[in-house]
Image (cartoon, rainbow, N blue to C red; front, side, top):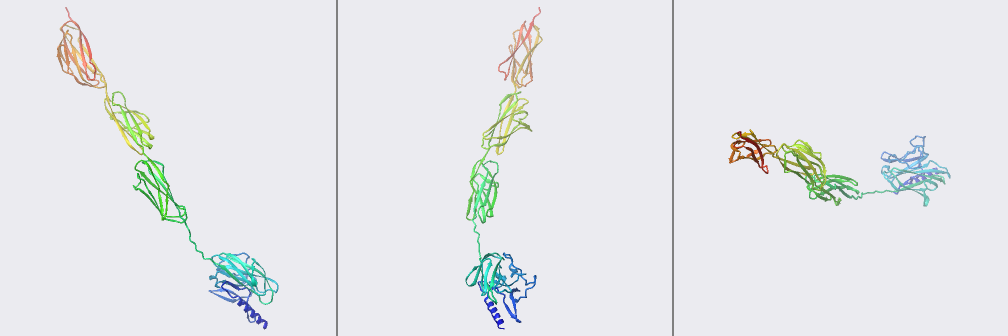
Length: 557
């Protein structure tokens, strides 16, 4: 009886020594017991509902029994706090546990489980274990377990190795433990006295509540590119790229490009503006603007991007706008004779500084003229001759020639036109007066011939225009010798006589191929080899034309 009381008192003292401390004192590793019907009954802490209760544990049963324990792994294994404490199925150790600091696993940070043999032999080594579990979803820093070896408990070794301290204290520095991580300390000791021995463990750890703020440094960059050279009628395309080359987003980025005088957007604005609501770090956003030039010249400027206090400028972009300028000259003879081709030479020159692309020259067909030929591939299209001459460089000249046929005399006017890309169309004209060459034929015939003195003969005078142009103001004068006397005259115009001279009134005009006829009747007055002389003058003749007709006058005895 005295021995039983002594054992019960030692058990109570040992249980009181295993009290919880705020620095994470663990439950004592010894298996405590109470007397019930003179029997020693072991107990365990475990969770039931929302409270922690202490219930007597049944004797170890076969494998599969809910109280049968499994030998733990030597290496840490992951688990969730909802599965704590561990079901040490198949283990031959008796387990006690405590959650620190509240005693409740769901509101604590570290769980300690200590497994001790149900009974050991005096002076014989035995093994026990301490399981340390991080019950949280965060990392615990610098986890340390300290075990106070009670009287009669001789420490032999451990895995991992511990650091001995004063009064039989052993400390294991477990380092950092990740969320739900488990670490196992295996201890080998020896009982040096009979009775009940034990040890009490404490755990300490550090937790950190960290707050972070991102530190960003956005940087604004802007590029602008455009063509170095265009023609005035070309659309100028400028390309922009705004970029955030730093970290952190930029808000309300505004890109502005004020155009120099002479450039406008296609909707006639002088300023190009783009807005990017948000520009993340490393993000690039491209833009394209299309503008037109009002005139030729050199235009240069740069664009600006702004966001809050940040500003970026693009490099200066210079664009030279060139303009082809055409001139045209249509050259032709002022006058020419019928029968010759009507020829015109057309000269086109580019006096501008831009290339005249797709150069086209047209020459209108003169009225009543017919197309004959053209140089440089000119072809008749409808009522005009057309040349497609390709490109004409600045300062270059191109000449083409066209030939027409004309039906007769007249004034023939022609107009030429030249056009090219980006160039103002130009035109020029000239005219040619086509005239014929008058050629008068004068013929005088007497009938009859010969004649006797006292008889009459008639001289027929015919004027024929064998040329290609009319002759005007044609005048006929006849002169008689003394062997003849005037009788009468008539024909194309009226005649007047003065002595031996007969003059016909002038013919106003005699067309090409036309004839005019005059007649003079005379009487032979004496024998002789007579000459009847006809003189013709006109506006186109530079000197008189004379025709002499011989008449033989005889006398019968």
